[in-house]
Image (cartoon, rainbow, N blue to C red; front, top):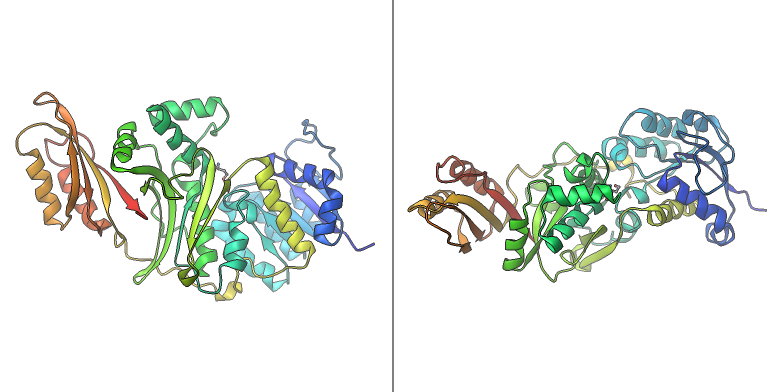
Length: 427
Ligand code: HSE
């Protein structure tokens, strides 16, 4: 019989459990795909005796012990950007074991280092499950969309945020109300900070940018904004202008350098990204002359993420040991960031103001001073002296200019809340 690929698991939660179940239930078909049996030789998790719906075998108490065992591959599903996950990944590679991980936080910080270590030992470091769950975007950027180069990647990379924004639009309820419901239903984490603050999207974007541009993943030059400040009013105005608000991870190669950021953006209704609803993820990758490619699918959950891990394991079983980020780790370039605020787009602006003479002129004056040109505007009248929203869509303008204008406008005694600015993407 052909030598099996021996696999050990550090972490048996949703993803790890899903992989074990699929390996146990579909062993024959997966063996045919892999060209050899996929054999589980080690399991380790926080609790041994939890009921998991599969048989726990080859148990070890300490995940670090897996690096010294007889596995060919360690599946790292511990999580966390340092600590045990980093220690295990390093020890596994040092001792000649391939590593498959779903840990975006780990790779966004240490991906280039781990990739170099893997290559120096002739090993594979694979992470399909780390970005957009079941969507095969890592392999696509690493091995498929390569002939003409990729210039832009835009992604809806966090299902929790997309679910919340979709529900806010459908129900007219506030961010806080929808988040609380989502937590009760188990759709959002008890501590949702990493999701709704944009951090999870940032980790995933750093990996996509690394793959797309052949660069070291870089979280240090990436402005990150979450969705907590998005109001039902913004969502309703967006709809009125023909847009939907989505939390996007955006990485673009520009003449000034790489522009990468995470922020809520207005996406034109009817375009592929705008139509991604609920907890789904999606990625639009623009590959120069080869054109745009759009991927959509489930970004989390047992089967989609287990599918991604198993695809990596089968790749390794077949001997696909290519570099983790598509080019040798020593060739990965350091990000040369586009200057802060140099990105150009149209904007949605909303000002909460007192409806008194001169307020519009004052706002328009500050915008004009920073060369921000208004394309269209809505103001709904109410009783004199009551607060109203003035909403504008601008022409294309530099982000820094809008930021400067809004900083001054916010100081006006007629403006009663911090102005809201949301860029329009891909309109
Ligand atoms: N919490 C993430 C999401 C999935 O909501 O999409 C894991 O990164």
